[in-house]
Length: 143
Length: 151
Image (cartoon, rainbow over all chains, first blue to last red; front, side, top):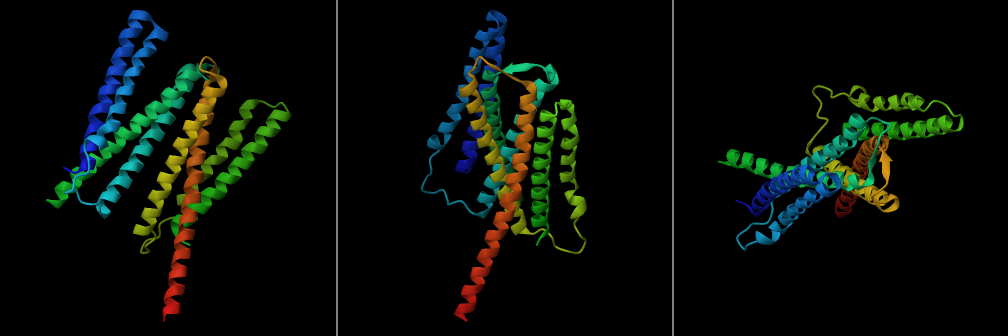
């Protein structure tokens, strides 16, 4: 398994765990203490930052080859998939309050960073999934 | 000029025209105190962007899209998405810092934000495609010149 695949696996495992813990934490706190305090559950999203340590954990070893044309292509495709997913998430997150609450309603500014956090997480998740899918496909083709 | 370049030029011209029409319409609606819903009429002009494939169709028997075009298209797409993400991030940060976390914004502002984002992505994509074809043409020309001098 290549280094980039290991890093991608770290992102694919850690991001859903962080999102699940944040959802569960926010839900439990909401039913126990009500809204403003329940937002503390979103702090679990910070766990996703642990995935950022993956490049340091899976270090480049002497045996790992320099990236070739195929690696670069896979990386570019994955970046496009990640950005496209984040773009879609931002679009969905912006349209949702308008559709649910109507054009006359308003939302608190404190919700806006959450939209960007969602876009960032979805970008890294989609990027990692695209890396794993493409190497999986390539592996089968090469065998 | 290849098909992708034509598509990029078409998109760029339509977008610039659309932005101008929207700006003039908004100014007219604002200063003449007209019904705000009238803005949907110039908004509809944006559909013209989707006619690009009809104006520049793929012709059978002619290679109009090769590896170089695919690479330029993908690089442009990544540049466009990156620009969108950075603009969106700094836009949100500015709104957060200026208005404060306790204040509110209308939900329609979010729609305007995403519409602006969509226009920005297409605008940056078109410019990136045009610039990259320009650069590769220049490289080709300078390569040819060096080659010619060598002979």
